[in-house]
Image 1: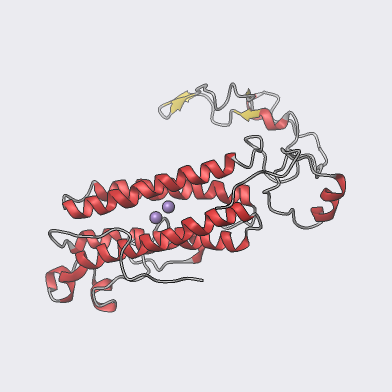
Image 2 (image 1 turned 135 degrees about the vertical axis):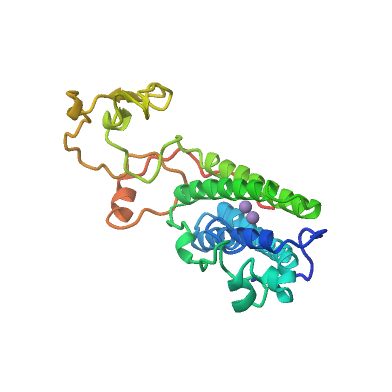
Amino acid sequence: MYHHVKKLMYTVEIDEPDPRFGRMLLEQFGGANGELAAAMQYSIQGLNCEDEARKDLLMDIGTEELSHLEIVGALIRMHLKPMKESREAAEADPLVAIAGGGGVALQDSVGNAWTANYLKVTGDLAVDLRSNVAAEARAKIVYERLISFTQDKGSRQALQFLMTREITHMRAFSAAIESMEKPAFSIGIIKPTPGLVDQFVNASTGEGEEGKDMQGPWNSGNGLHIVKPKAEGGSGLDTKPYDPQPGTETTSPADSTPVGEFVDGAKGKGLKTAHTKTQKLKAS
Ligand code: MN
Ligand code: MN
């Protein structure tokens, strides 16, 4: 159930309306990393979530994002206001001024209509939570860039508030992944192919104007090692066929139910879980 309270989560004040900046702000209203996308992504994931604890988390943050939509919408309306009467201001965005009457609409900063295609909802909790960490990181950097393009004190402060909340959310989603107590790269119920999973293929080789081969913890270390491609006379990736083994990956009691032919098959085999007993989580 949703309930609207007639006040903003953060009170917005601006000194000088700037219609062109208002147009830039639309990116966080109806854009790919904007507040509506965040609100819908987490809320729809929440509707699907069968883990009671993390469903609560998804609904909490999904709902807060709707309050952010309201804040950024209020901020944008203040900046767009001159468009309602001034031809010069209207020229900052004819679509907003003429089709939208100088108000906010579900579009991004260049007028692309909002679309559900922005949303990442897989129905697998461990996957969805990772999408959410990335979504929060994107929202954070967009807010930071918006801050860097306005000198208006009230706007900067409102954007600072919104930007900060995204980092809070990023921390919450990260903690939710960790609290599932799965090994770092365990997704689903089928273990990746041994050996192959540790191979990092050096697919961009040689030295030239565009750089040279480099080594780092992403290709040597952390269990990974570099493999020379066959095209370069190396052994290439291990492509020996290997049968998928459902029920071999370490799972969590919070995991989403596997789908398809594995729903019963995996259960019959007895999934290995990271827990010997059900997770203890406090209700509040
Ligand atoms: Mn937000
Ligand atoms: Mn957020």
